[in-house]
Image (cartoon, rainbow, N blue to C red):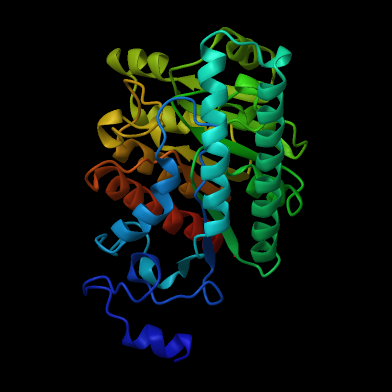
Length: 351
């Protein structure tokens, strides 16, 4: 059955068809305009694991999401599909995670990795494996970008989108990053791991094409990160505490979104760590922090971003960690759907 026939036969009001792709949509990766690349990887998580399960859990939860979008007309027709989950990536993550966990346990107990051959070997193996993952994600993303498709990453921990950002740097001369997060993620080789989840924005800023980093919701960071924020002119940080205090004094979220967007260039990469939201929306995420954005605040910001005429060139959603129930995956699936629709809309409005 060709795509036109599938679209004619598709009922967006019906129960999600689990024989179809994500959200029950009738698109294969070959037919889709936006490809979600699942990356079940959590090697360097420093607190609670579980986010490697997110791609599968969000895929399963997606069939319960109603397809009507109040902002994007006929959103279900835009063409979203998820690539197959790469079991080799998951197996490598599980293998290296076990080693990284033993390394971190000894590191936390006071052992110095720089003076211990076993810990040095584990660190080198994790760094090599993480670099291989980056290449794998970059190559996969480039294969889709070269077909004129948009690519997004569904982690996994927050280290997973670096390969996608690298791929986009091969296609765009300059772009900014809008980061929704509880953490600044500006640590250099956190805990000795060059590609740690806590180092993603430090590594992204090494890419010369990244002209701006705008961080929103930040509320857990170290003094060294604050120093980087204060000295790198590319970084504009909207700390959660500062925003909340200003809102208590009368400033609106609408005013803040206008200010946030003002700092961003025309092309924007959107990176969403689910812990940027209120932890009531993501109670099982690996490093939850009190405070954060509500779901509607996030979606309103992305709607305003697209309404400003800026183009979302790619995005990621990471650090969702399914618990014993479906809540975290349910929220993740809804964030993913709305953001994917708005990202595609930003391209339609440019065309």
